[in-house]
Image (cartoon, rainbow, N blue to C red; front, top):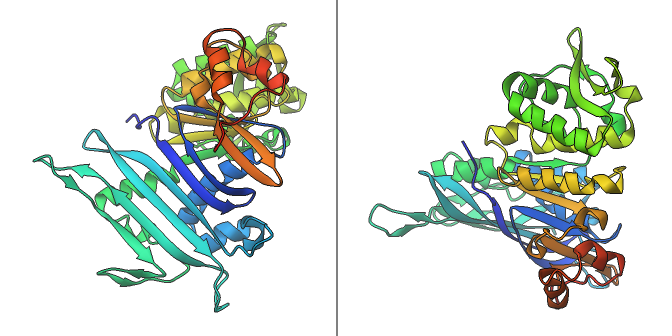
Length: 387
């Protein structure tokens, strides 16, 4: 099964961490570009919050982030709620069906709970046999659903409503977004071998993922090795190393037959291997993942290898939607980067601003007079006014 690409089409949010308000249109490969501390990770974390809240409870997702005071935007005015809204598509009978889903969470003024769901809604647009538009979905206001009754005010309704076939697709599509912020120390650890697994948030289970690719998707395992060789010229490939029932990774190099274990692999090489495994992991190849988000994929990478990494990101985005955060001008230092796929992220007076590249910059890139990387180095990239 191949997922609809792009999965996410538009996201709106209000008062989430440093984001006062934003509306972001998505592309198959979306690049969130901006300096450290601008709020790129906060935007990605809002998407992860949706998956977390649906997989457990909103309260658990908030607690994971340090409590509601750490999630709500801080400002001079009192802010007691935040909103996340998504427009995306799911496959129904072989055709993409547009979906709108969102919720507003806020403080519980009765103090009986840590927070309450003030509103949650879902709308799926389906074309019937006679061309009419059918609209299965729901609208929850303060824990009450018209025609259904009440639910616990601190719970989301979508996990319960997922027994309906179309709403099940909505729920599982949102839960199938994958997020990665790779940690090479975590990736060096020896772990129990888990076949058919997906890469963890910090890069856990890298060896198991590589082993699964070698056994079940050898063509794509070769793609991982080919990209790694282009990024790290002395490398031949990266493989799973099995120790009884435990798993780790090893690097094969051009210098003889020797393989190096995880402790001897450089940070840049190991991080690059993790990025490639994230892009071509089994959940992507089997059509299960709807989106793969990777924070700072260029970390510890030699600038000369940035072009190869961008090629890998582009290839993967033909199968699954890819979202990355980056502050690297080198990654965009090429004339085939589509400015429409880049969102500039800046911080102004403590507020994150996210917008499309301004028209002047788009025209310069379109006319091949400069690259986005050169504009970034010169401090000329700015979000479109009103972004």
